[in-house]
Length: 269
Image (tube, rainbow, N blue to C red; front, side, top):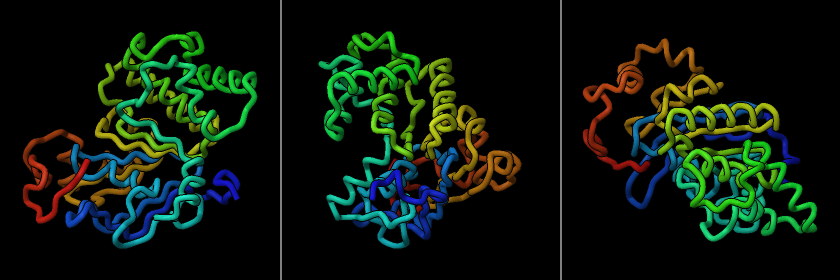
């Protein structure tokens, strides 16, 4: 059964997940529910382990404790064939874009289709055209990555992540390195595509004020765990010192300025 045919009332569910890299515990006891059709923002300072959560969802990192489910089934850690099938249903937008510089925009978007779908050339070209149109870059099909602005390159990477019509999209710091206008375009696209395509989206970011307006649910990660889980309105009303420090960008408070300060275990981005 393909990922897209599985029941997805909860597209992603983590229960008591503890994540580690070697001997270092990065996050402890994480609970996460990302329901179908929603946008979930995972917020927190740089280096606290936000991106590590995405590794658990894609099957790259097995929790040392707790459970992880995607599309209603346990993530098949260590089972290569099942993981490949799972990942076909997950689109990932990396902060570095990962575009191949010697390929055109259209050729970059076509890469997942060539690898995973036996489409005739005419149909493949049509799908690529549709994906580029969805991100407003139909006219850029023949350009090379070096000819694109940062915001355009990010949108090409988004079109490529959507190539196989995944029901789940993971965004790893999608606004990093973008000017305010380009960041606004990406944020608007994430929400619009989520709604029009019926996706489930999880955004890992430290860009709070840009992301909250499009989020349905929010998790704040700090000090090796989840310090807040709720709606954007509940987050903004929170009086928790950890939450207030993060939202206000204050250097002094319960979240240490240096990674690892005040902790016995390290963290990762």
